Length: 401
Image 1 (tube, rainbow, N blue to C red):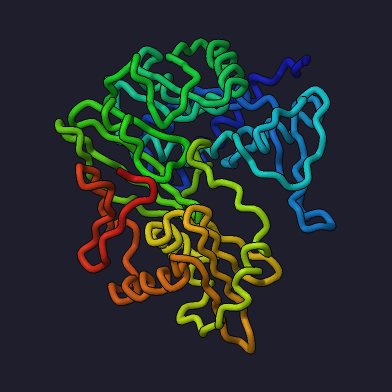
Image 2 (cartoon, one colour):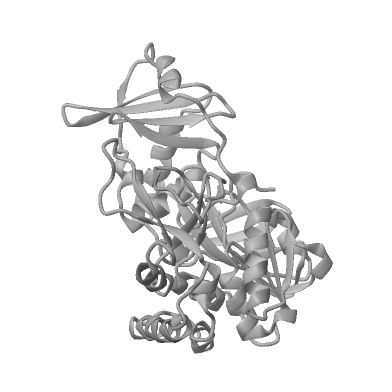
């Protein structure tokens, strides 16, 4: 593909504008990371990506438009230097960027994360010169390049589960002169050949803290990990690892989400109506809390959904025809909530009363004054992985030790 001769000049101007915009917006990041962003060519790492159209299709699905320099040079370069997440893969399927097609719906499975979040992650992890770092989730390689620019390639190891993603990132990184250690590996197990690490930073979320990552951290090292469950509430935790392998640290504020690590992704549960069919003989009751407590587009609902996952660790949630379904493929439990005359009614079946458990936790959460993420501490030790708060009952992460 032939690129315009003035590409580098155009990119320099757009990159400088992007960095200035992030700084002017008060991005909470170390200035050294902003300086690194001013030197890394993001467009090199995103030769093709998708952007959402302004309106959904007739079925209500998001229309994803392919963007490349060949299709629309100006749009491609401007998007590359915007503070936007650029989706590069859907449903684990690679696009043919020579002949890309419009997509309707689909689940994003790889992307170039918006630069402000990448910089914030590296900064929140308290990464500094001299540190050796392990990055979980190479993706396009842009975040890896920033780490190499700041720390030097010899201090950076990055692992990626998708071989095609890794190959593309490697070509881009090596083409820019960066030579970190790259490996195809399941990020849940880190990468032992390059251990020990001063900092571990994940660009994907886990249901619980992978034990191998703590084992590969130096005493006093830190791990910044996104956490999420199958209800798709999210949190970030900054753990400090002790010499005995235990770890402790706070949840960080904000509503930031990452794609789930593929080995921690939710299993398919089938047709929600099949699960609901078994609930018809169950007597409905009035719900004490409406499902909006978890589903509303608010920071509190996002946070509460993450905490609720520890109460129903194997549950998933979906709304079909205005009925909210909770499905637990491990225990076989299910619940369905439907509105009638302005009130919500719930039917529950199986060994776990899913909505009753969530309501009980919401009661405790409200009684504690609806505490935010930063008031919770995650402890990982021989007793498991526990979220600790002075006024809220202790919660154990799903899938933890």
